[in-house]
Length: 199
Image (cartoon, rainbow, N blue to C red; front, side, top):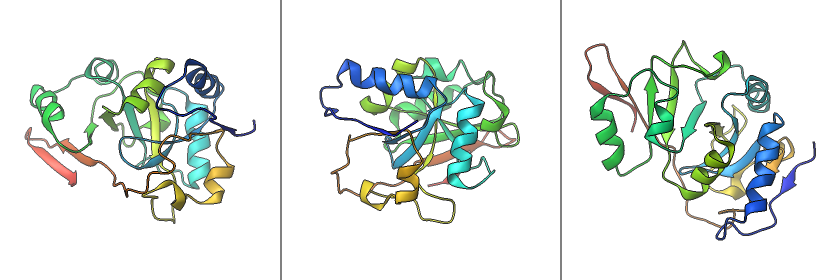
């Protein structure tokens, strides 16, 4: 399918704008969009075919860079066996976007997991939340770069190779020149202690 460029501004979040996104995601499609952190390529997190398309775009079979985005703690609990109470509190008050690695997952395809683990982030960004709520499912994201390239901190740093190989290109935040950084990543160790994998 040809890439569809969003024609409406995201400040109004027009209904048909998200309906178009929904059609792409339901048709094994991929989207290029700004998350609550950096520009990313995304797809339906429950769609193994779409996830393979993203891995092909990234030119890697590695799943380490894949992150699942959910719109709420309630949605998070649908895909992991347990959310530690301390973690819920930390997610509410942590100042930077925080991704958590979970050991016990459910209802996600194997190619979304790394050694049966998955990295998931609850997003507070309204744009990302609206995409997820329109789909009714979490979305897989990964930085919008080929594996050998640095991740883009702004839209203008995204390579033409990535742009050519997605099905939908958002206009939201394209003109934002503020450099963005990836999220903090944490996990619990065997002793129940929180470990910062990336700060």
